[in-house]
Image (cartoon, rainbow over all chains, first blue to last red; front, side, top):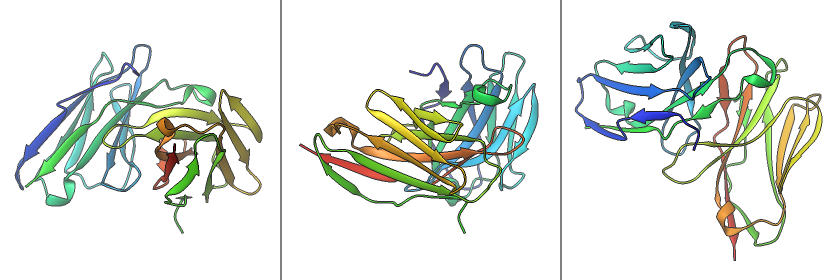
Length: 115
Length: 111
């Protein structure tokens, strides 16, 4: 167990709806990254939060947004859901500082199905 | 050209054999390299990290890094059926901690 938790475990939404996914980082970690993993693919970087600000973003549209709270937990929000948003959403926590402290540990993921 | 490339497999090895998993990356400024194991329906689990050229051993696992050739590999000695999973290679070279993953290699260890 990594100490990273995510909720909910599974979620079913319909196209056009909005969804919020939650992540609590591992104790001592201050950085949260979000990834999307489609079936049969490697995780794709969505964005990262450090000190409550977005610290880098992958090739995802603005309808993917996020937040980080003072306790380093984080939310991923997706608006106007599309069928292709169906995937496993992974949260990873790490401790910013460079060098060998950048290892990311993943939570169990949230499986989102869009119908 | 994909940033991180892996053979999708499956790589089939008998129990007790050595499994060799390979990964190439395109960004020469990459500095951190990781191997994650992912069982079906589960999230990635960190197996090894490597930062310097050469070998790094941890139990049955050895990671090998060659930055000149932009190549990183994972050797699993005495493979067990419980090692059957998808192995993801990830590279971190950005100014922030963005991991770029390959598509993963599926390993099957037969009893």
